[in-house]
Image 1: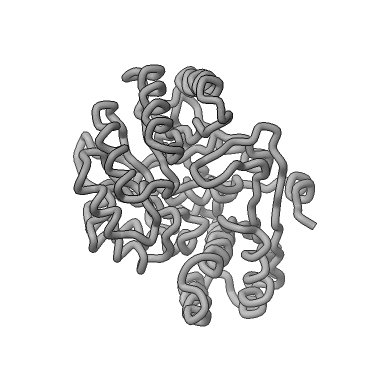
Image 2: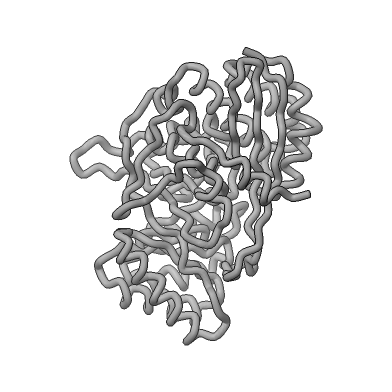
Length: 379
């Protein structure tokens, strides 16, 4: 079996209901899908998390020419060749996001070739179902009362849908942040876990102040409190609070995560499977986290292909401590408007009563709707 073509599909879709996190307002959802075709009639699908056109350019101009005529079964060899071939020009960021998309598609092809889901080829499954938390509760209005009213209703809707955990966004200033978190805790009571994400919108002083103020509110974790480069700052915030500190969606490959773990900077790492180096590298990172006693909850923010890849990974992430009460990794379920997340999949991955089931079909276990792919393709 040989690779005969590699196509990239940059996607963009406007949304009717813009929302904000600490860095910007979002009015358009974007994504990058890669399609790898073989002479055996099999097609593999990958997802690259990041700016679609730059990622597509790296794949089209640098990676694809090296892969035509190669066997897609040589996964580790291809990963090392692409990484080593361009490491002088990009050990992080867009080149690794492009490598992630290629790697996920190759895993999808290998699963289809052997007639097995990816998690079986990766040695699993440890689990076949995963508890999900709802990522939402973004700022929807700059008027505090209006915003609180909308997010109150949104939180109630997550409870009604069976979610036992949800995540909100901070990083808009101390008074605004603590008022929001207090309102949400009052809304959901003890019926749900509550996670808080600043999207690196605080400096160390702000993050420590906010963390200390949130401690009485039983916060499950404080995510990306400071800039991703500031590993020492993460460690300082972690030392200043009892709230678990999470991060890593903006970090790349096992090399970044080795530095994070050596510094004891995070309780929970959150590499994005479609960004950190693909399924190959995400599994390496997961095993390294296990040896350090650090939890691994993948960041998920992309197309339905990225969601499926995360589910395959979640099936094989080891528990940090083997016991009846062991912590198991969680699925981040993006609950914001997204026209081609679930819509891209023939059989969407659904969360029912807070639980998602790992796809059992060959490869990623999904089929793609080409009409949706073409509808949102960026010209």
